[in-house]
Every structure is written in structure tokens, then in C-alpha cells.
Length: 300
Image 1 (tube, rainbow, N blue to C red):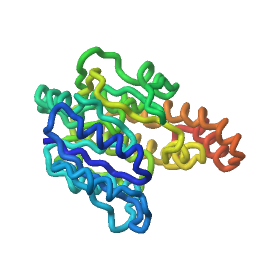
Image 2 (image 1 turned 90 degrees about the vertical axis):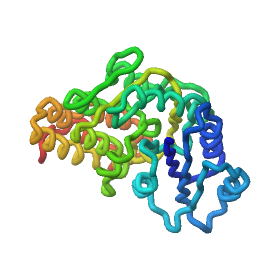
Image 3 (image 1 turned 45 degrees about the horizontal axis):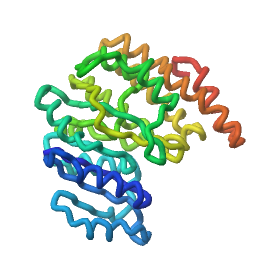
Image 4 (image 1 turned 120 degrees about the vertical axis):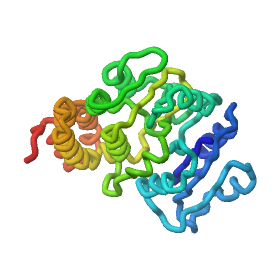
């Protein structure tokens, strides 16, 4: 059984698409838990939708209080009971063979702590898109491979610190490992990379596959996109990468420490956000983004 944990805050339209893509899986070895972080007094129609759905492997609950993004992620970890789990985005889509394929990868690689299945990117309208960010992920930061690739140790840490090429909502996690680490409640938009790097330093193995079975929805209304324009993401990121660099140096992984200290892909991302911050006349955002992109790789 695979636990699919679905943290949600928002409207019903895209959530229904996500849920229906899970229900349509070719392999029935899954269980879905939807954690609705909407305020109880907000009329969303979501509780009524799940009551009418009445699927035996779909559980729905509205949080008694708003937990926020990281808090709802952690709740998903705490509630999972299957050996492996997914923390799916509430606007993403599982293609019909997702569960079937990840079970096959787990069977073939019993040592895996993380599984990255093949992903394609869709826009707000559901059509497949090719964005600059995702093209860069694939052509610059992601390792070149055909079929299945296994990575671990400093090699994996360096690869991810140069540019995080994974798609968090599509990842399959070994539940006992993610429970042992958990999400850092102080992080808002970089909590996924922090968690992954901790699993890597614990000896975790990543299995990546090129069989496309998941659709990741990219649009400009996400928390990470809005916080990037304002510069908030990068204020958090600088302290994060410097802390990771120190931990990697202490561990005896100098190449990973150097990659964290320079965090080039993140600096380039900040540069791409400068025009949007300028258009919004966000002087604070422009200042943060500029200092981040061109700042020293050493602590001040």
C-alpha cells in the first residue's frame, strides 16, 4: 500500500482533478488522505464533494485550525502508516500508471529512500508546457540518464545543491526515514530540499526514473512564486545554504559544502525575479534579490 497524503488549501476545481487522477490509477494499492487546511467557516463545497465521492480508500478531514504549508506537510508525515508515502500537490495530476510504476521501482530497488518517477510539466489549463525553469532543470542540473538511475552520498548532495532537479509533489518517500527527520517548522518555501539533504546525509539512496507518470502543475500564483518576487524566499535561502555548507564541511563532503556556499542555481533564479520585482515597484524585493544574487558566498 502507498499512502498518498494531499495537503490542501484553496478551491475545489483543481483538487477534484487531482483526486480523480488518483482514483483512476491502474494499480489499486494506494490510500488517499486529504488534509483540508481551509477555515471551517469558509464555504468551499469540499466536504460535500468527498461525502458524495464515498470512496473506501479516500479519507477526508478539515483541520480544526489552519496549520500552514509546512504544518500540513508534517501532519501528512505523522498520519502515514504505509511503508512508502507521497505528499502530492493539490493541483497536480497522477497519470494512470503512477502507482503501478513506483511500486515496480520500489520492488526493484528495496534500498531506496526516495523515488523520483518521470514528470512532465503542465500549465494552469492542464496543457503540457516547456518553461525556462524546467528546461534548465533537465538540461543543466539533472544528471543525464536513460531508464533508471541510482544516486547517494556526496555525489547526490552536490547534484541537488547545484540545482534541485527533483519535483517534490511527485516524490515517493520511505515513511520511516521521513518520520525520523520531519519538516523544519522554521522554513517556509525551501523545506523540501532541507528534508531531502538530511535524508541523503543519513545514507539515503535516490532512485530516479524516466518513465513519465506524473504531471506537475506550474503557475505564477504559488506561494513560492509570490515569495520569490518579494524576496522573502531568498532571505530564507541564504541562511539555509550557508548552514548546509557548514554541515557538509563538518561531514567531510567539501564539494557539497562548496556547492551549497555558491548555490548558483538559486542565485540565477533571483536574477530572473528582478524584472518582476521592479515592475511591482518592490524596492525591498529588488534590494534583497540583488544582494542575494551578487553577495559573498561567506557569512557576513
